[in-house]
Length: 596
Image (tube, rainbow, N blue to C red):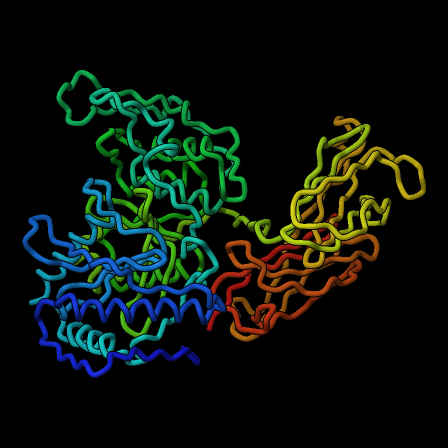
């Protein structure tokens, strides 16, 4: 694990001795919950986010019972400022089964409340399976209990994470937290039995979030051959089947808006996913088979890969190996359990039990958490199946617009004047220049210091030589203290656009790939003249890891090395990273995988 931040939990003079195979009281479970908060804090401190700190809430932990209300399964501890920790109530089980870094625990009694129902099912099965559980597993759990209540540093090691802690708001690769109610179900049918709009369905919610994560495809089309019908719940009248007219679910253009689509687009995407798997809609809970996601992704949405795996044809070790590789390669998966489907989009490798980030797609208070899947996941967990290796033909590279300047032009094309609008995240020196299509300076518009916020400037098509520009393509270059961005603008009538040379993107080659210590990145420059270009490396969330100083390139072969470190000189976590060589007319992109 490398040099880890060591934590010592001081328990004072209190000495605790566990009697194994016995219920755990609130006092002991509270010590385990406190240790878990220290692990969470250490993880963010290692990531350089020392401002993130968790502690137990002063409120009393709430017990979680099985469906009968007779068997105590766990204690739910609320955290400050937010989040929760779920500690099991038996010392032969792993101490902490789940935890969340934000939100609150969803206590709503509803068939679609995946986390609540999953915990009850999972913990009940684990307790029933204890007589058949391998002794090594029980001994490991016992040692972990001892370590967590005594505060031994070895038991508080935060481990490695994919994605890196703090790199996304959710903690997983998927940055959305969609659920099954409004606005996501705005296009779902009205339930004729209740007169209430139907839920999206967990299968469609999971699938739609993954499609939005990949931002692929750009459209989806259904024909009348995709029509289907079903009988409404509770099937009282077999003559009143509901007809789904599939072409209504078509989307001519899916505007992902860099992974943050509008409410209307979210609803359209959720409905399209539901229709693609033959969703049977109901206001009591919509249902579909998770296994149908494979065919839907491959045929309806034209994905390159997607494989459904059932409990009958895959052993636990193979399943976890594939799932772990998917998480390290930033490829979210769909899991199914106890009649529910949800997204798995993160992995943490700890000293004892691996942790998985699950996005449940239900409720508004807590839609995701880190969960410790059991050793016999398909048997004990009753995991009915999963959709793994989900991958589109091309991987979308998110533009890092949230932390950097944004530039746009309107109208575009323009004949009289164009307004250049740019947003600054902080006060900065700003230069706005107009370049011709070869990257040559044509007009200097702005060279001054501006405050944080939105700014605008006009260009009337006149160059520094006081002559009007010829109709065609021009490049607006925005330079700030920390960033350089380009955007295209067309001067002249819109009909001339087709004859204008457009910005072209090519691919870089990397060797070795995957790499451990250093990677060499090669590309062939296609610039007609010497051109200044910038090289940046980004993680899968679009966050800039490091930006190299601008260099002048010319036609021919070029290469540079990256040592796998960020802008602060610290090694990056294992995972997928994107290289982007940016210039006004020609850009190069590529993907490298960092391993240990």
